[in-house]
Image (cartoon, rainbow, N blue to C red):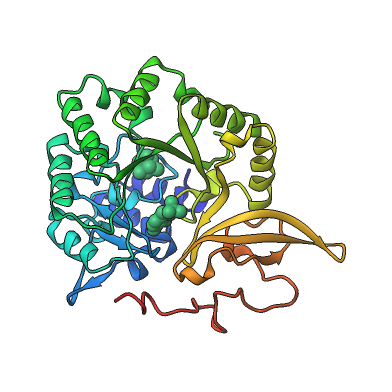
Length: 372
Ligand SMILES: *Cc1c(COP(=O)(O)O)cnc(C)c1O
Ligand code: SF4
């Protein structure tokens, strides 16, 4: 999945037998693969009481992400993962934290935040006792603004036994139950790429166990070349998810990081696949939004191709924006079948910039100027 020039460089360093040279080349290549796409390190980490809160990201007004240190690993090591710097043992690239006290203080002072999202890696690799400690602290803090706890996880595919036979599966499910009983909504954001992942009896049982706690399961997946670039497969996957009581949520485009050149599907093609799948399913599965790019300014959905005076344009909309005012303002780009990402697109109708950019192509806002 490396590009040819990187592959050749590595091959020659490897053949040279010089370990040091190989290591530094690996590091160099990693840095060229855009380890923190969409400005995650520059823009998303909040400053609070004069301190940069590593392990916390706050990009969209309503939702704060928490990267527990013990969750900085994953069941899967997907080669398309945009969190890959978390896993490579390079501490310069890592984010993650242990203590939750400062997070709770931050949430208390940011009443606009309604959702706390546990992410990683995969938070479900944590011991249930540690997860329970975090949750107890949040419940004890009694934050009136926090209405939803979310968990982003791939565990249902890779280790459904987490909810069935693990030593601490009982405590984990009790903790889910506790979240729901405390009056918060628990949204389990499950990552599935393919309908085959829903075939085992274990995954079905695990879904039942989670739902028994009162949590809802919402599903999301990237559209991947060679894996799921087929509308029938998506229709089958969404239908099956609905049948199992899950709620289809997002179809993502592969980010501009790592092996995007291997897995990426161009925007227009992804839209066509999305539409062909969406047309096949009932309204119960049409809760899904896509295809969506998680870009520096926000989550941008490709709405389709329109013809204006006979000329095709790509129709876009922001579902989440760094500036909440950007949300749901339609905008247009020149038609380009080869574009994979917002950076590849040119504003339509002779405009020089998209509405969220200034004349230098920078984002047209000051980060959380209204918040911090
Ligand atoms: C996707 C995302 C969220 C959550 O967005 P929703 O549309 O509310 O699901 C929050 N923060 C970041 C950084 C995200 O990428
Ligand atoms: S499951 Fe998610 S976090 Fe884990 S490796 Fe895959 S994409 Fe990355």
